[in-house]
Image 1 (cartoon, helix red, strand yellow):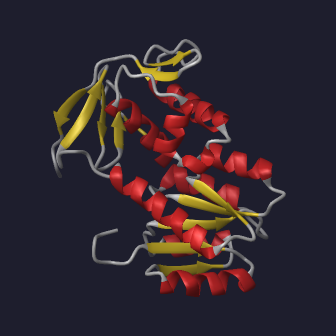
Image 2 (cartoon, rainbow, N blue to C red):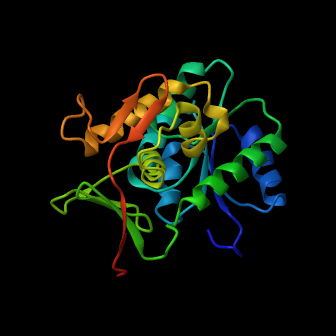
Length: 244
């Protein structure tokens, strides 16, 4: 997304009575909306577009929204907001744990949804580039290129990380040796509306530990501070990143 083009939103919902009026409303609010009636159609659309945000219904015929969300956070750098029914509390928790940025419960007020969309886009924008264009981070031999969202291990191998794992790692790298409690991490990574689901943070920290710790059961880099939260217990250096 740039400063002149409207934000691109992919709206995935099989219910035409909700999807079509919502797409029209979002268009009036300045968003460029592409519709999909299923996860399969959404995957097809994603081959030809790079949305700034995906609005995703959980319950759909065929592949459900949770499965598509997992695909999005593992393969693409795109924020996801779930559209959920009131009775899907467990699915909402699972969605946050696998990397969704927020959720809105049906029936919802369209103005609230627009506020959530803009909040998620602002968060994504704040961490989408490093403070200096060609600057990255180095810690214990690991390197992170924020522009490309590429993490490499001490041997130089690229380690795949999801969008949420990237934002979580950025939070730690920008605040090394500082205790970050769960509420603050949720605000930095997934937004204030996720504060009811503290274990979503614990789950994401566990996922990140499995990728960067020598022994994730005895973590040395991301340490748990009992009663406080988590802390990146190592030095972090800003390093130049070669642009290609």
